[in-house]
Amino acid sequence: MQNRPSNTPSISPAAVVVAAVFLIVSVIGINWFTTFVPVVLPEQASAESKSVDELFYILMIIGGVVFFLIQGMLLISVIAFRARPGDEGDGPTYHGNPLLEIVWTIIPALVVVFLAVVSFNIWTQNTEPKAAINMVEGHSISINVTGARYAWTHQYVTERFDPDGNQIVINSGPELHTYIGQNVDLTLQTQDVIHSYWVPAMRVKQDLLPGDPTRGGRPTQLRFTPIRVEDRSYPARYPIVCAELCGDGHGRMQGAVIVYENESQFLDQFYEPAIHAILNPPADPILRGEMEIQNYICNSCHILDSLGWTSTTGPSLNGVADRAGERVPGQTAEEYIATSIWNSGAFRVPGYDQQMAAFGPDVMEATNVMSPEQLYSIVAYLCTQGEQSDCDMNNANVAIPDAIQTVFGYEVDITFGMDADADAETPDTETEASDDSE
Image (cartoon, rainbow, N blue to C red; front, side, top):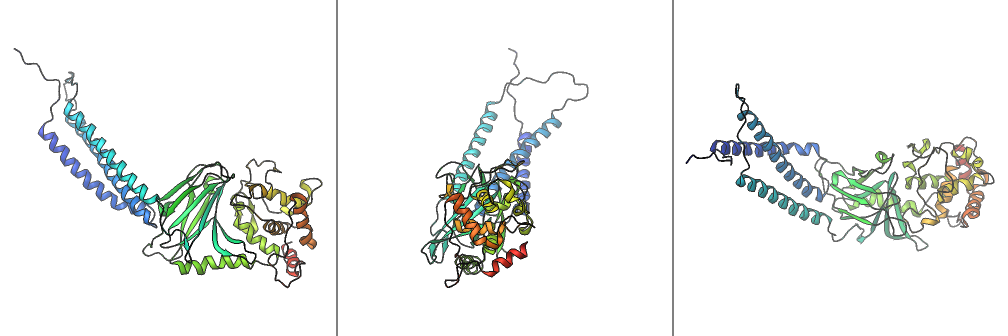
């Protein structure tokens, strides 16, 4: 009986040797290549960054081996089994090799299971709640982050109280302040669309999701612990960016993590000065307004040369006081500016369709809420932004509170920031400051 040729391809010993050698070379080459990864990645600035980078190295090695092994075998096949000169016949037909198919099914399956287990363990380790979170002066405080197009704001709910018994809340704007060894636990909420809070140096990223509670967005958590980086001087600064496309100002939605060397430096350079500024604000509402307005996300949308703001998403605030009195018939400049801040949907400047973030009574439960006293000082500051202000700057301590009460029904404590024995009238420095601004 005539023997029929087998339709199952055979694997020669030489092919096995070549594949084994190429596999070893690939492993060595990829391992050597990963030594350059730290040059590409940001420095490891958190405890979580080490485990994340270890997982990245594993993925690089496995992915590199698979890539170069496949490309190498493809190259070998092209060379070894190419058509020879004068050979115009068809090659043999094969219907598969069961052993080879079993091998290339089992091995990738095992690799995927291995990666899933390792990734889940690292994710669990990095996201699980830690003990003694946000410790400041022996107390665990709350740190809240709000994302809104197109800026981050950070708030520290301290364990300190003002003379009236109100809990002091520090608003640090786009900067998160922490120190080496502090277990940071952030509560994140969005004012509008989905954002993603990403700190590359810490290797942490968390989405902010829209929806309730109380119109502040569904809370999500982000946890990390800063560590010391060799040859770094402190305080160290690491960028915060938005990793979720949120609109035309997405690229400008940036902030920074400021890491101090220890808690003592954190207290001396950030925490205590911030509390002192809250307990002892400038008596002049204009100066206080210049400080207050920088604690909100106004810089993410507006131009204001006096503060170095350059965004063009919203209308320019340069010279806003010169035109505020003419914007809405029957409204004073003070009423228009106050309404534009607290009730951002009341007016819309032609050509600007973005919805401004809300700060007034309708968001009293949100993290960006602005008190009547803060609104008073910010309006006072904006009333100085112009050559011929429409505001009544000679009587600002009456005109602005009256405007807030007329529009919103809230009374303003204009003595806020003044000495206890000072007169309730606006100090002389206010008039001087307004004259200088004009």
